[in-house]
Length: 523
Image 1: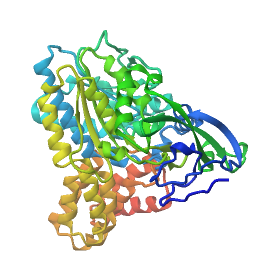
Image 2: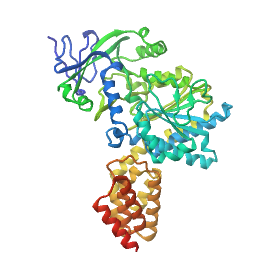
Image 3: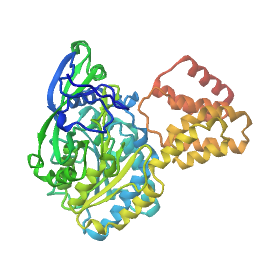
């Protein structure tokens, strides 16, 4: 029996069976040589291609079953890619792309923007809010744009169609919804207008927004070492009887085991062979997550238009080829009943550039979120306004910088004065998520507010509420705002927000008492 070598930083629940001649020499994970590892427990699937693993069926089942509740309950993180700051960055880039288009394409057709896996709908709300503002400033009719919310789960489309914040845009024809499945959809059928987007109908480039998207769709997995390629086949075992668990619980009890099968670029899809030959000659001693499904999706989206595709994407992942060296097998990051993987953006970059496009990537190392822009359009080098907007709103100061600042600010909230809080609110475009964090401090400061400061707070509250996209979360923002208004003796405003709270969350004795007190003070 061979000897088990233990390395530092071993991923939990990952066990490997590597052929001896391909054993990595410096990877940070358990390597078990010359013997079959102890695969105890209940076997759910054996030696499947990673992209065809049961894992992805569990993932799809979770999102189908949970619908909007996945985001409402916070099970799926989404704030970092669904806040007003990242929405403003995207709106600036999209508007710049539209301006480039006016010089390059002679068409009166609207500019179509398709959000893939739009989830809660919160990003779309912030994007359209910021785009509306930018269009008003530039005196550009908002009717030049069409935003399409897409998902594979029909229940999400139903929720979007009923959300009160979307109704005005639906009526204006600016917003629409469509089912879209990355594995099958070759066109988009819009449910409100009835339009069908395809290469026969779309005269301008399609803009695709993919936030927290590529990290959650099927990937292939390979091991590359010494110009040799092996495909990683995954087996799934549960340490608990799977019959006693639902899909969400099952994911928490899974153990992943990998076996390795020799392959070659010639066995891959023809459009990916040159890419893979490049990685075969460049990388060594590494496990490579290859986004085959994501690349196929980009091809289908690009083929929907006669003019190509502009992709805007934000995700956790890697921005340069160096991060693809020496990697252990992926350890999926679990979020209750679903999981995600880091995105290999250099592969998307290479795919874009090999097909004549321009990839705009972060110039400095990101801390939390990687934001990229792929210009996969005819004459990509002529999209100068688009490139300039990316430099200003991502490179110079972008969504990742904003998130870093907010994390730092959280540590000093208990020391902030009103001026600092209002400054952070303005920086965040009156972000309701950030404002909720400031409310306890504002309650502490309230007794010392001057009349002028009370007016400033009241005005800020109106801005925050106007830009709030409610999902029915556990946190009742309207109630928190109402109590702050009551604290600063703005009883009419407090009464309004207590009523909002009651409308959204129902009556309770505390709120009823506050309402009675407000009315008493106002009489």
